[in-house]
Image (cartoon, rainbow, N blue to C red; front, side, top):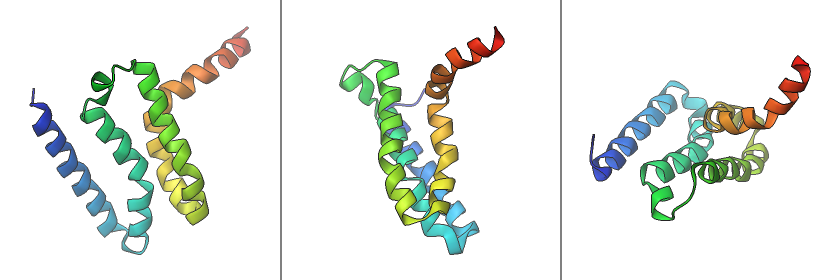
Length: 113
């Protein structure tokens, strides 16, 4: 297991590299990719900096912070361009799949009956 400091540096290096590779692959839309990935980077930084231990927040509440980060960025991304919002959508779904599933689970259970 890496020390927290090395984990943060590794995270920053790898995610920055990932963003630049996407930027290079999609050069006309590279700026869009960078803007769309900002909520993802914010949520990952909060996670890797171990902020939930620092402020003593429960896991479910921490997941809500990620959800609200994406929800806060959504109007900005939609205002800039629909394509940017669509690029950010997989990040949103990946980070919030458990919250989404918890929300739709009662409806799915009703459908089974």
